[in-house]
Length: 146
Picture 1 (cartoon, rainbow, N blue to C red):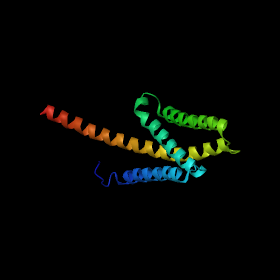
Picture 2 (picture 1 turned 180 degrees about the vertical axis):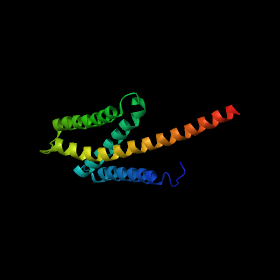
Picture 3 (picture 1 turned 60 degrees about the vertical axis):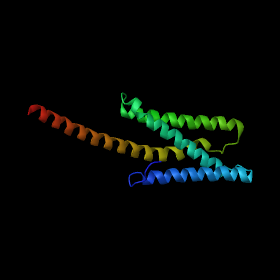
Picture 4 (picture 1 turned 30 degrees about the vertical axis):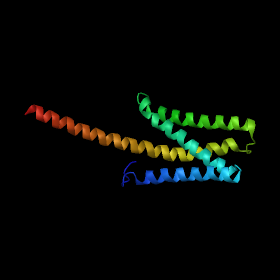
């Protein structure tokens, strides 16, 4: 178990909330014996979040490619998976008239905001690490000169 402090407080709250919410959805489905659209949407949002987080976490494998290409590629991979899911689901269930458009919009806007925030934070951390490395390099060279 990790120690909860000010740097991980919010992420810990989010983890606990997600686990409790998913547990509640599953418990309601089991005890009430029905699986509604609200439950399906909530679980689908969780699965999309898992997929998007996984794809974003693979950035370190793609650093040799231009950043714009990586970001666009990651977006298209996740969006393609969502559209494929909708297409498969349409073979077994009924989709709304504008299901593809609605999925595109309801995924694209949060993805742009959250992935943009992720990359801004990532580059801020990289810049900070580069400053620390430069200071260490300078200190090492100064001690070698003496």
